[in-house]
Length: 125
Image (tube, rainbow, N blue to C red):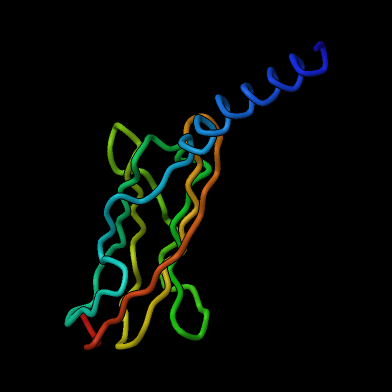
């Protein structure tokens, strides 16, 4: 009986803590340019709004061209007081495909990351 109570307690603890831990990660709600976008004009910035507040010092946006060279100004930063939106300035972009990489650290320390691509059809700003 004692072994059953210990097992039941561990089982209950696992199911009450796992969902809370999973929901503590920050994930994108809105991206500009969006994933898979095909743009006629190159953007000047990439902006991602997340579903929760971030630790800006540990959250980063990076943009690379198809050759893997970085095309952002390495100035990723939070743009609002709620710290849920990151932005990075882009260098002038040529026509081609670009890869956005993001790392988001939520206020509680949970880290998430991801990436997406967009295409610029015409070059020059």
